[in-house]
Length: 74
Image 1 (cartoon, rainbow, N blue to C red):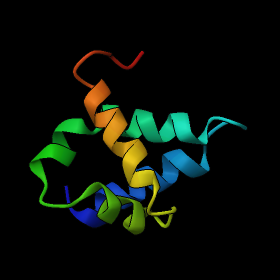
Image 2: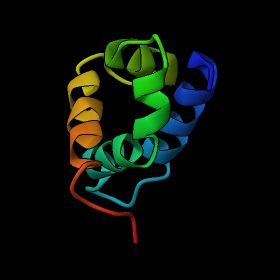
Image 3: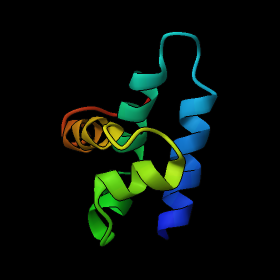
Image 4: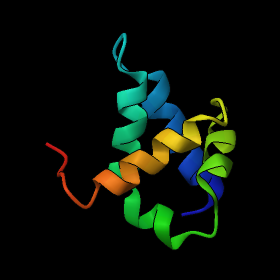
């Protein structure tokens, strides 16, 4: 996936999140796309910037990527 593709997916999940669940959706993005994120050359902050969300959400993406080793999406 390109940086733009990752940004679009992250933005969609963030902006379509139910009330109060935007951070959880960023974690879910990290879980769902962990392989693509890890195989890319982009930093989590780059992905957050491409998504048009605060750069600090890069940390939340990173948490989701780490969780991908332990959880599955329902």
